[in-house]
Amino acid sequence: MGQEDVRVLDVPKPSIGPEEVLIKVAYCGICGSDVTAYKTGNYVTGLVIGHEFSGIIEEIGPNVERLKVGDRVTGNGVMPCCRCKFCLGGRPSLCESMEMLGVTIDGALTEYVKLPASAVYKLPNELSLLHATLVDPLACVLHAINLSSFKPMNSVLIQGAGPLGS
Ligand SMILES: [Zn+2]
Ligand SMILES: [Zn+2]
Image (cartoon, rainbow, N blue to C red; front, top):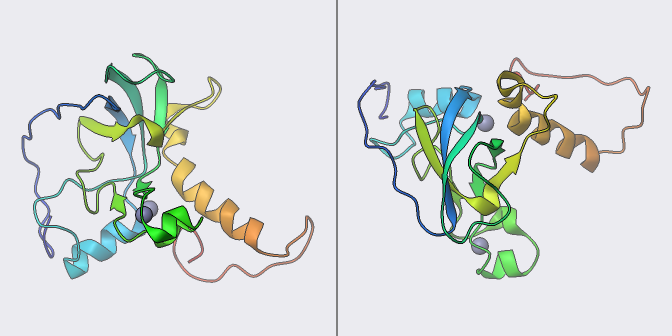
């Protein structure tokens, strides 16, 4: 992907490391940040975009214990390094070497995506793979509400045309 340049290409199936999983993508959303990147060209050229996704695990690395082949999953597209001063100080959102799915590393708008197992979450059976693509944007909204002082039944104004009201 470059500025106003999106292409459909054949790409190799990713090979995974010992701590990673390979996921066969079921669905992948297109985020407002992807649209902005399309207009401005601010992603790495040639990168596979997409960070709001669901899928089924097809391979696991030898050191992965918490997940198994066949698990229905989604992933956290934001991966702090866990080593820098901000990560060690409890502020991973300010990480100096943050990896971001579909922004700094190949994303999920493709057939297969790989992720560190630590960034992958099993889905409950009652949640469809289609609806699970909304876990990432829903998490953003819930985080914002948790930071606010809103209480149930408060009146609020949601401003903005984006799907998150941003
Ligand atoms: Zn997004
Ligand atoms: Zn860090």
